[in-house]
Length: 211
Image (cartoon, rainbow, N blue to C red; front, top):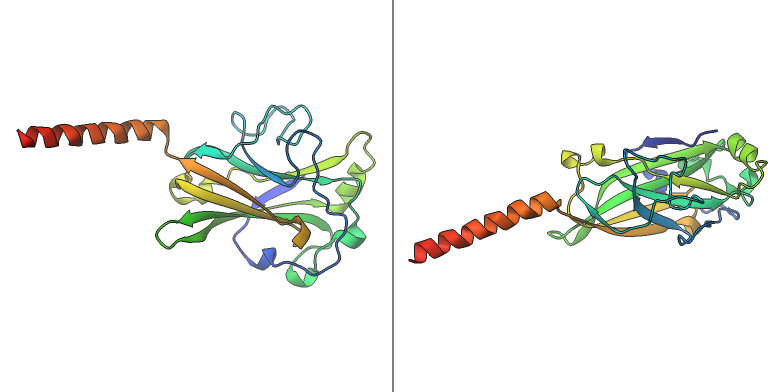
């Protein structure tokens, strides 16, 4: 009963359906706000049985300021008890699979040259409705989490571009579940140090030339 994750190219999968889904309720068992959250994965990835900040007992904390080589993740949680495959499936005519509960996230970077948001990459996650219904019989389990994996390998130079980012997520193309998480990426500390030394060297060179 695993949630299967895979990277996906940006396609029409995020086209929003007009179907009457009613029970895709985003919720949280912890102090993390409902909806979606950005966070830094712990260690080499999701460890300790607590893959997201929504998980009870998790030591992962939400944040929105990262470095270029950080393993940045996006997560969202649904109210497990409210899910119903008869009402919560997206329109199959738009590419949603009737046998799956699906989540799609697109990552956008703000281009300061064109003053626009550029699509950088995307992530698709799903779990079968059979597994959802099995989980609904598990005592004490009230929420189901979806999260992105490490998408750096799908980005230029395998690292995040500095600047402003936005992650837009949706369950089954449902308008009511669209969330946007904004975060910022700054240069690595070592890069800043090298840049500082370069500026210092430039200043010294100018002073020497002035003499």
